[in-house]
Image (cartoon, rainbow, N blue to C red; front, top):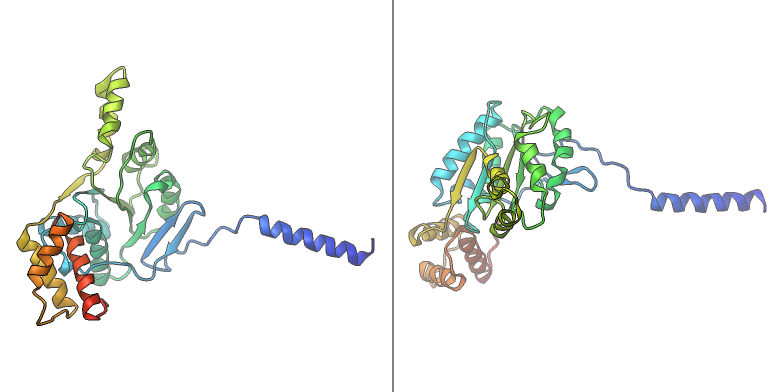
Length: 285
């Protein structure tokens, strides 16, 4: 075999090793954006240039929740103590929309003062790794998990308990954790009942499950709205996006839309508005 043949073989081997080698660890630059999505498999914070959000003044029927969460978050953004928050209640009632809208409002008042970092439910066990990246950053970081809950045989809730209010290091001073859920106690009822039936001391087993919610110092309940508030949402959206048409009975159509879906909520209102905008040939920009 000639030297040229040897070089060709070595080149093919090198290329093959490059293909099977893991990708290099990404550079997590927290100055790249004000919002990120956490990817646990690569320990990567992906910058989000534009967050999908609803403007604060379009959120109707949740004035008390807005005020309480705003006070808590602004204290945190200003460097003062604040509580982890659990936003629980009916689907589509503005829980995640409020978190994102509040993040935008605070940064509009004080640019760059608050990072929003979304962590997916299935990546909760990686929270300690994420916090180790955020701790030395110096920036105020709001870690947000949408639709958080735990089902039977799922023990990852223990990781969350330790991060929220336990462990040797504890939660970093520059990190706050917000979660939304349809469940007030985050744990499926059948999971709690199963623990009660199999435990030597049923009370202690149930207490361990329920105590997860106790790690959140602020609980905010969200519920389906009444008809008048629902109409306020519809009319607010219609005005904001210029959806005026003489032949459209806005309230009648909106009411029929809600009846077919069995509920009145911000999500149902937004779905009707998207339908209306499409029919009128208008964009929701």
